[in-house]
Length: 624
Image (cartoon, rainbow, N blue to C red):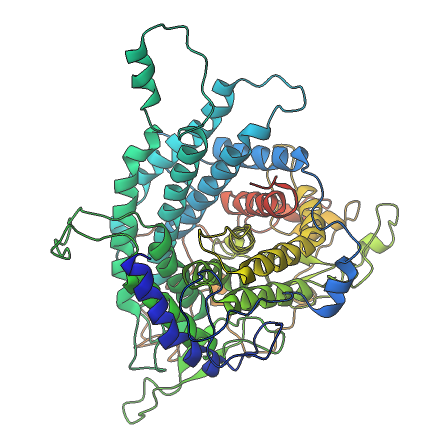
């Protein structure tokens, strides 16, 4: 076993028991009594406890409903076709190759769009052997060219990304950069392994020269030459963001923004967990010492560095013990420290919770939990992830056991009921995911990005578990339980995908409010904040859509008339309403609620793309 892996598992022994005690979480359903110390079920090595196989990651009623059904239908390539159409529209409508970016995006949303493109290109690469298998005429050149076209756009974005500006922004902005370039590195690795490694398909050569044959046989995918640059940027931004970890307040956790009063929010901590474990698993190393020159003295920054895993484990231990989830099991936005601005107040506890719930706060953690499972073999991370997904599904108003929305939703032939706004359940209605700004069309540029983030990370979490070389017998049970649980989400994904597809305009651009896809044929007036059914009880501040308040809870020196964001680059002002977030001029055809507010944007297109990709990957993609 590699020394780094030995260190990682030793770290797990030290941290996992205290983490579970702090969380107060029960172990997943097992074949025996819960153990005081959780064992890895990945490795058949000397351990002081027995690996326990989880029976199921599903509630009993959902598991029972699946017993007689097929957990994974045959691949439906039309679902992949929808993914390809969505990314093609996104890149032709919104990406400017000569600028290397999506000009209407802001810095952090551009990083997310790059992540979506990398993930979609990787899905395409994985599917290439299956495209054209039913008699169609598809040349290898045409298929490979499509992957390369997106990859060249990603390399253009490497130069178009304003890395210097992002270094001076909030810690969450930095961590989107980390995840984005690690996703692109993964695209390169997957495409190389599938199509340029030993046994990869190759064209027949008419040359009789063995030298030329060997020359071409030894060529790898050209994208590998960019991996050092991508890895360097990911490493630099992880180093910068890690400065936000703070133990003086709340016993740990990441601070969101150093230019505000301390606010420890879910997204920054989830990004730190996901980014740290991704650095442990995906970072290929970096020997480039610029711009700081602080290498480890022995070849730069190596891969599989245990400090990244340590950061992820400690980050999740803090988050899970932070009391950041509400009665529905959903992550609220974050915590302030009561009385922090009072010099006579010595409070250091996170005791003022912002009760606003956003979709992306339920998503990023899923990548972190999946990564922690891969790094440690602790099945509790998978159990926690599935519990969170199931809480989200329930909060959209969808019943997994019945595999249908809890509330009746209007049928295509029911014009009367299509005018009725379905009931709000916490993160959606009629089984379709929504953010609290969607129905009223009051989303900022930030808010328009959130749902796509959730579905990107759901797809990452639900990837099939891959067996290590020396897996324990318990691993097979975990792999089966994980696959069945993810398959159970297929009906919900299909329902959301169908609704979202019906919000596209004539140019193929997705709308923000997917529930409108269930209301086809209805006409305005459309919901406003006054009548959209979303519970707004004054306990939460929707600062992501309305801007950060100029008060003593959020800002030092509040009320002095100078916004805290002054002096920052105009492309990104995380301390106020982001540039470009103001609603566009009203253009509200009575039959198109998604033309209100900011309308259709690169962020809404990214959301549709991520949803369709999650549907393809989880419900239809062929097994590897």
